[in-house]
Length: 323
Image (cartoon, rainbow, N blue to C red; front, side, top):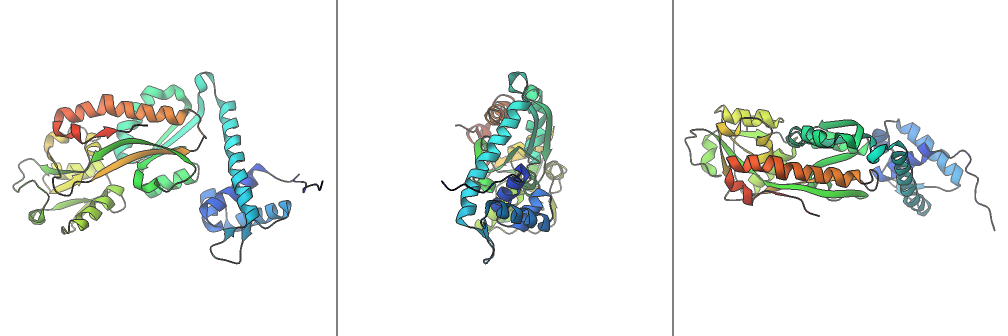
């Protein structure tokens, strides 16, 4: 039987560079995710091709695509990386399958609500925790570069993502918010153009989804002020500077703000957001499922009851995810 090439110089990092480059669709994006130079990625791939004796990428087309040999190596390589990661986790686990470290990224509206409660409940799950928040591009960069193990974000952002476990955390409606004593009819309509519409930035998923819905409804409101911060947005409305569109979780994370607002359902053109948790398939063992259940339980037992006490009509509109 013919012997295959000896791969004495083959390294784990080399396989990691190849798999990341293939998943990102090119060496430029692969280098960004890996924190390497493009020439460094190119040299690593060339060395790997020399080691296996075959071209792994077809460089005659742009963007580059995998050859049949590259496709075979990608399939095997992803499994090898998953197995190595799992072996590392198992080696690092202490009693009760404690992880060495756990990094979770989520939007501000969830980080301030779930973050401290999650750590309080499940701190024994990992020796070291990191909970970060930010707008979706920042979240995605952390997850793609392996700086975050888990990402919680709007389902539409990750619906096409492959190679991940995914669990729905909650579904909630977008709502109208007005300052106390607002002089106009508190319904979504053209009459509100006479008052200041306080927007979320288009950098945020809440802002993009709101603007898309307003465009579908053919509502046009002057652009005067916008916020990235969910707290800044609701505080501006509570201060009497205009009205806005937000979600119940965005309101909940700012203590005392609901009492200073009129919060109303959107009766015409209602829309919702579904928040989803994703993690690389099999990388965290049972931790992914456990974190999901803790998040759902926090919402159902600690957050929803407070929201429903202030706004009973929300009870039929909000739900936690189900398997």
